[in-house]
Image 1 (cartoon, rainbow, N blue to C red):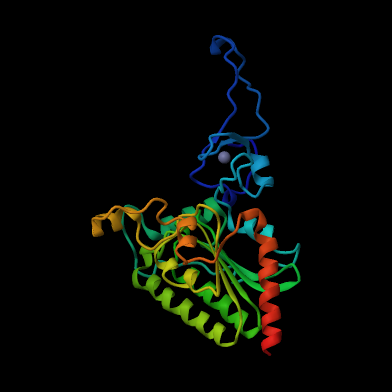
Image 2: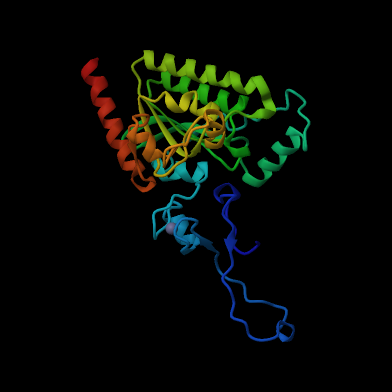
Length: 303
Ligand SMILES: [Zn+2]
């Protein structure tokens, strides 16, 4: 908008900022051309419809101050909210996808990649690195839905695999925060292979008696859900996140059955035992420290 510079990666694409309405002062033609520029933007909460000032939303980790609706949050902002200041050391920051299949459709894969790199300032849909949460060193991977729907291609799979392997070699717990529409169709089989690769790396990490915490955020679906996202020793989710494998409509059409209320939400999956706890974003860091304390104590006792 040229009004307030916000890092594009942090602005959810689905949320349209709404400029505050100015009172109608009669005929617009008579007014001077130069308009007063508002200092910020108002965002309408899709859940409670309250108007929230964007800075207020940023300060509240993109959680509605009225109804606690969790807006999407960018990978870098999320990392910033969890790790201790200046402790995050990013890994494989320059790894970038290539159009290995020469994919052509309504637009080419290369043009998509170029557009998303520009609009998000990310190289791909995951940021990985080593950092400290409370007193604990961890290997942390955080996905970002704004980059091609958080889809998992070769780069997402490879960066996460290297992160997990780094966790194994450095004796560190791994935390992966997922948000994804699934495997990246532009890379076909190369995307699907990432499911096996990340899962194998996690199995090797587990053999070393190291903890893996998977955190599911809105939405986490398909190939990501069918691989590393559900392999956590502990699986946490943010409130009211959509979590599943196939979409609800596909399941309904295939099974010809009515789906239960709340199907594919965090709350439904907690009731049915797929996830271990629902943790609001603002409590996530404190809870992670507690869980990491337990794991560290258990490892010490088992050694
Ligand atoms: Zn709200």
